[in-house]
Length: 178
Image 1: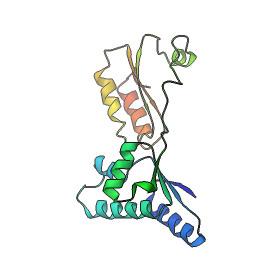
Image 2: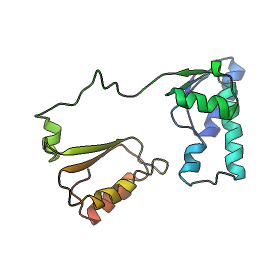
Image 3: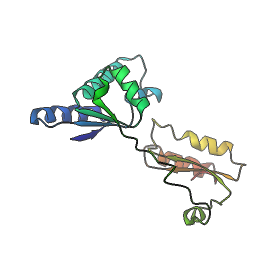
Image 4: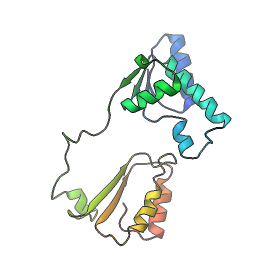
């Protein structure tokens, strides 16, 4: 069974059923919880909830046959903080290889369709538009850069904050954030 991080109660159920059925579980970790929600100020660092969630996450990492992480830094952190043997972790890099994929220099039809000129500098956010990423700060950044017509902010993704961001962009009449 391949499972991704969180919701944590679902992970515990998957671990339990897989154990009973003698099916190995691979835990695919892309975000470190509860640290991500602590850093987003959703729960306090020193609170009981954070401690319980850390213990549950440690159990899940330990009970999984293997834990796939997306960087060596993440692996080192989890080995140290969860006190799990390094052999339980495998690193699989899942981001863009800039040696193989390069930007199109000119004539990009998508850029033209959204009024981004070839000379414009583009800052891009691609990911979950949620509380943990705090992506909504980019609306404030776009507002500060309003007079810099050659800088565009492009946000790609879905999530809890997307609709709020779209409303804020419309209210502020921002043309430099998509």
